[in-house]
Length: 205
Image 1: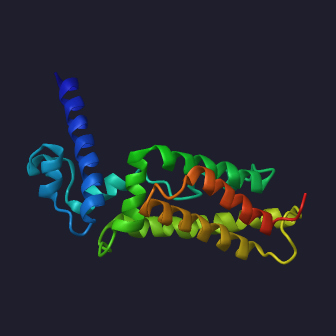
Image 2: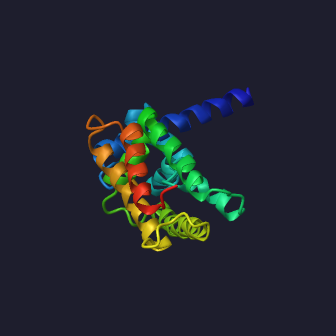
Image 3: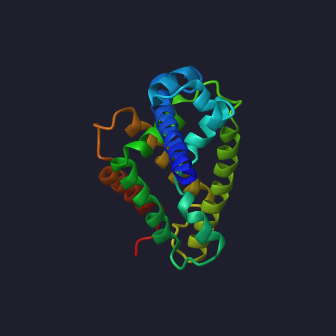
């Protein structure tokens, strides 16, 4: 009986998280209310409060699966296991673009992150993700420093300028595609845009 109760509680929690993501997309984080989220999930407000302390706690849990661009490459870089940093860059970016194209729940998280957070500075995850972003910038900078040491970057390109270029390209791809996903195929056109940028950063092989 206890197992069934635990399973039911987890099912309710997942329903609330799914409903929260949908309401955040529709209303924005600041305008969304727990009452609306509870109604969408088909539960009482009491059930929401049983699982989450407040809206900030619910938002944090909703956004937990979000992986910002280049997150996946951090561990390998820190472990110093990369032989070709540019190939590792590609391997980090392209699966994320494909997942974004095909996974609607993943899309919703990015829509919230890029387009639905307004006056939500009180939400702890904002500060946390911003700290992660700064750390990732440093990691990608290290990647391009390694590429420079291997003679892969053009003489006119610095690791700092390469990191900035790839970061701004990815942010632009994400934000523009999420505004209207029918405008272009982010997996196909995104790969082409990354390769076009890299061709300008790298020496001819």
